[in-house]
Structure formats: C-alpha cells, structure tokens
Image (cartoon, rainbow, N blue to C red; front, side, top):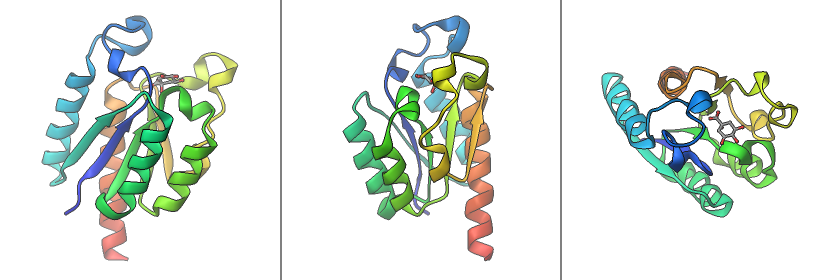
Length: 149
Ligand code: DQA
C-alpha cells in the first residue's frame, strides 16, 4: 500500500513556538508522531513533509500522483494564494483533504478563501492537531471506498 502524503506548508515548521494561542503548543514533530500512530491504527502509512517553498510543495503533489495513495495538505498561507497548488491537486487524481489547525473562517477575511478547496474531496479545520487525525480518517474512508468501487 502506498503511503498517505501529509504535506505541510510555510511556517508550520514553527509550530509550538508560533502564536500558540491560535496553533497550540504541539511541535510539528509531535503532529508527525500522532499522524504515524493514527495511520498505523488504520493500516496505513504516512510520508510526512514540510516546506516553506511553494514550488517544492507543488513538486510533492505531482510526485503523489504516482507514489501516494492519498494526500492530506495543510498548505498554510499558500491555501489562500496558490493557483499552482490548486492545479497540482487537480492533476494528482488522488483522494485529497485540505486541513487547518485553526478555524480559518473565524479569523481574518483573507483566510476565508481557499484556492485549493475546489481541487480536494473535502476540508477540515479548527480542531488543532486533531484536524490531522480527522483528515487521515477521511482519507482512509475514501481509499476504502475507491477499492470497493
Ligand atoms: C493554517 C491557517 C492558515 O491561514 C495560516 O496561514 C497557516 C496555518 C492552519 O493550520 O490553521 O499558516 O493553515
């Protein structure tokens, strides 16, 4: 079984240090460990990555087409700006979930628009680290459904 790619965008390497009132005190390493443990409980594996570079994220989404079973992506601020990530996700033809730690709809207006949402199966936001767990659960359902179909 190919791994689920869990892709993290800009500034998520600062998790735990960055605005903890919004993003919590867990580090990205803590998030990664939760993802591996939850994926294993569902019989999945995770390839967990972070980049501050839009181009690198686009390349990873392209790579996912051949190498991943599904994609969970917290694109950080690129969520709100990146046509390139939208286009890469459209071309990936993999089950995909957009996720956010914070409830972006409760925050500044510029966070209310996602350019990548139309290119994924669904969006999860506002549950802190649990957003990652919920995204992996949703992808597990989509992968299972696609095998039955
Ligand atoms: C975020 C929300 C984005 O608006 C922000 O730019 C981030 C983190 C989140 O996980 O809540 O970097 O994606």
